[in-house]
Image (cartoon, rainbow, N blue to C red):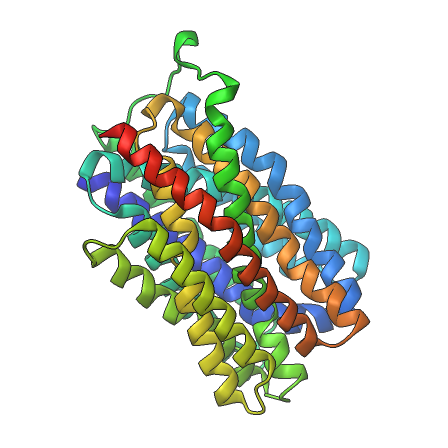
Length: 387
C-alpha cells in the first residue's frame, strides 16, 4: 500500500515538473513561433483536442492492465516534451506538436489519478489531494528552474530536453513501483463487473463542475507569465514567477487541506471558488509585479483544492476494476475546462485586452460557485446513503 503511495507521488512529481517547465517557457514558445494572442489561444486549444480522446482510452487501459500503465504514459510525455521544443516554430508545427502533447498529457492525467485513487482507497489517507500537492510543488520547481535557464539564454529545446530526462527517470520508477506492489492487480475486468451507463451520470455532473475549476486554474497557469511579460513588462526570469507563485500556493493549500480534519466538501468547494475569484480580480487590476503575484497566490489558494476534492468524493467507493473508467469519466469532462480556459482568455484578450480577459476568468469562478451548490447537496446525499 505504501509502495502505491510512493508511486503516486513520483508520478505527480513528473507531471508537475513538465507543466512547471511548460508554463515558464510559454512566452518563449509563443515568440519562437511568432504567434499573436488569438493564434496562441488556438494553438493551446490543440492540447485539449489531443487529450480528450486519449483520456477516454487511458481509463480503459488502466482497467485492463492496471495502474502500472501510468509509468508508460509518463515516459511518452517525456518524448513529446522534446518534440514540442524541436518543432514548434510556426503556427502549423506548433499546433501539431500541441496535439501530440495533448495525447500524452491526457493519457498521463487519467492514469496517475487512477493510481492516486487506488492508493487512497487502500491506505485510507488523503492521497489524491496530497499527490496534487506534490504536483504543484514540482510545478514550482519546474517553473523556477526553467526561468533560471531562460535567464542565461538557454533555448527552449535545451530546457525541454533536460526536463524530459528527469521525467523519463521518474516514469520508469513509477512503472516499477506499481508493478512490484502487491496491492496492484492485473486490472482484468470481468464482463459482469462493467457498470451500467446510468451509474456514470453523477460522475459526469461532477466532471462538468470540475471543468469550471480547471478553466480558472489553467487560465492562470497558461497566461500568468504572459501577463507579467506583456502587461507589466517583466523580464523572462521574473515572468516565470507567475506560474511558480501560483503553484507554490496551490501546493501549500493542497498539503494543508489533506492534513486538516473535519473540512466538509461543500465548504471547500464554495469557499475555494470565492477565494479564486477574488485573487483573479487582484491580478486583473494589478499595477505592479508584486501585486499581481499576491493575486496569483490568492487565486491558487482557492482554486487548488477544488478538483482534488471533487475527484476524491466521486471515486471514493469505486471498485478497482472500474476505477480507470470512473476517473476517466470525471477527468475527461473536467478537462474540457483545462482545454477551454486558456483559449477563452486568448479570444477575450484578442477582442479586448488581457486584463479584461482575466476579469472574465473571475466571472467563471463565480459561475462555478453557483453550480457547485447543487453538486455539494448531492455529495451530502451520497454520503448519507453510503453510511
